[in-house]
Figure 1 (cartoon, rainbow, N blue to C red):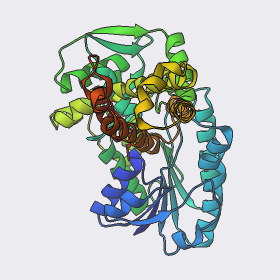
Figure 2: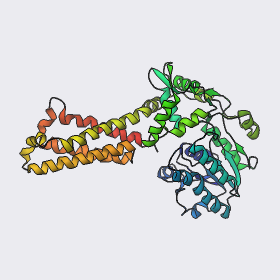
Figure 3: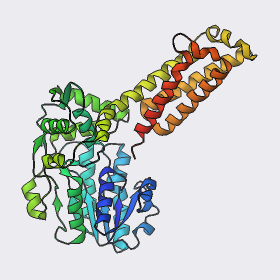
Length: 421
C-alpha cells in the first residue's frame, strides 16, 4: 500500500517508516524538515500541520494515513495546530481524496490532568469523527535500539555516576514496548480491518516500576549498581517548569505529570484484541549489548545542557566586560596598530553587545546549531586577528589567547550535540 506518514521525522515516526518499508509498503514521509528522510531513500513531503496549504498533492494515491505527529509541550496555539486543527484539515482532504484508513498514534496516560493529555484527547476525537476507518493506538513507553526524548532521558539518568535519580518514590508503573513491536501493530491495522474503530494501548508483557526500569538500563550500560536518589515531586516539577522555559527538550512539567500518573497499560486486553506478542523489557535489553555509542549518548545527554549553560556564562561575562570595562584597561595594549583609541573602544563595546546576544540565545535555546556557527566565527576571527597582530598573546602566563583553542572545540561539540535529527 501507499502510506502517508505524518510526523515521520520523530523517534516513533522514523522507526515506523523503516518498518513499513521493510514489509513492502510504499511510505511517503511527511515532516517539516524531511531532507534527512529523503537521503534515507524515502519519498518525502515538506509540510507543517500549522499550515493548511499544500496537502492535496501529498494525499494523491494514498491508501492509509498514519498520524505519528505530536508535541509534549508548547503554546496553546501550537498544541491545537499539531493535535487538533491541522489533522482535522488533513483528514477532510484525505476523505475527499479517497484515503481508506486512518491510524493515529496517540499516547497512554490521558487521564492525567495536563495540557498534553487534553490536547491528545482532542486529537483522538477529531480522528474518530473524521469519517475514515480509524484505529487509535495509545502506546506505553516506547523503547528501541535508538532513543529520543523521554527514553533518552531515562538512559541519561541511568548512566549518572554514584546515584540513580528517580522521581518521587520511583514506583510508577511502566509496560515498555519495543518500537518494532509497535510497528507490527501499525502494520496489522493498515493491512486488515480487524482493528477498525478500536482504541488500543500497545504495551509489553512485563510491568516494571520507574526505579526497576532505571536499574535495568544501568545494568545494560555496564554501570555498577547505585543507590536511588529520590527527587521530591515538587523539585521535579520545578525542574520541569525550568526545562519548558529554557527549551530543555523532555525536561518539562508535562513529562513530570505524565510520569507521576504512570505509563502503565493493560497487556492482556491488548494481546486479546490484536493477537500480538511483543517482547518484554528484559528481553529487549538482553537481545542487544550496549555499545560505545549507547554509553557515550547516555553520559552526554545530561551533560549537554550543562555545556550549553557553561558557554552562556562565558558569553555573559565576556559581554559585560566588553561593555563596562574602563577603556584604559584594554586600549593601552592596542596602540601599535595605529587606530584611534575611540575606534578600539567602539569595537569593544560592540563586541560586548554581540556576546550578550549569544548569551541570551543560549539561555532560551534559540536556533542553537546556527548560533553555534556564529560563535565559532566570532571566536575564530577574534583569535586569528589578535594572534597575528599580537603574537605575544599566545605566550601569556595564564593562557590568554591559547584558551580560545579548547573553547572553539567546545563550541564544536556543543553544535554536534544540538543537532539531533
